[in-house]
Length: 260
Image 1 (cartoon, rainbow, N blue to C red):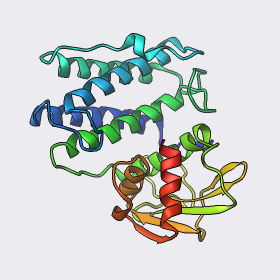
Image 2 (image 1 turned 120 degrees about the vertical axis):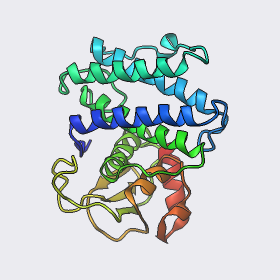
Image 3 (image 1 turned 60 degrees about the vertical axis):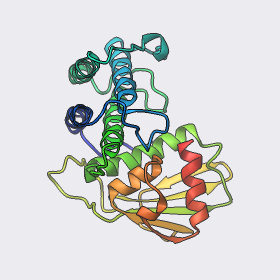
Image 4 (image 1 turned 180 degrees about the vertical axis):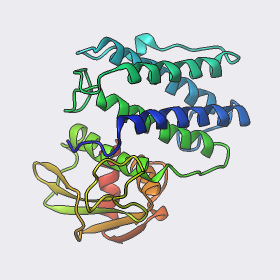
């Protein structure tokens, strides 16, 4: 596991910002508007989903649970009139819980990083991608903040190598991901990203994937803004949002295997 690129303060700020923008999007559009990037969901479904995820994450952290709490047993279905206040309360609870927690405290997670810091990061990216989903339902495509999206790519690689390693195998094929709008700078919330911030080389070996944050030639290279690369990996935009050089089929196989 590579260490997160953002500070816990930056993650909290992202959760607050993107959760508020989801509320704004839900108020601006019809509650029943379909979400194209989440087939079968309406904006209302997305709000309820994220609110339940945030309440579940808050419960995991507040109790420092060492085994997974059953999220389905916690799920709530607020009435239409109560939905947005209920979601705002869920977001506030999550932020308050994380702000009071020790990021290094042990807790159950679904990756090798069994600390509370995992939940800061995961919930920031959960809110960011679903904010994009909610606004996309209204015809908007506002990008994810570049620093947050860069860390989102790194997190996707962490999650995929932890949860989908058996699918991400090969004979040494390589995938190069390259953000075109990020670099190591101060003042963005990025914490010591190093000289190749926003670049990764993934090698698909018979034993599973390896990831190196380096600039190197791959069998396929995908270049784009951090937001577009992050959204591509999460299945929100197609490869035509990127510059792709080399084996496009390998890039799609890589994305599908890691995202599934």
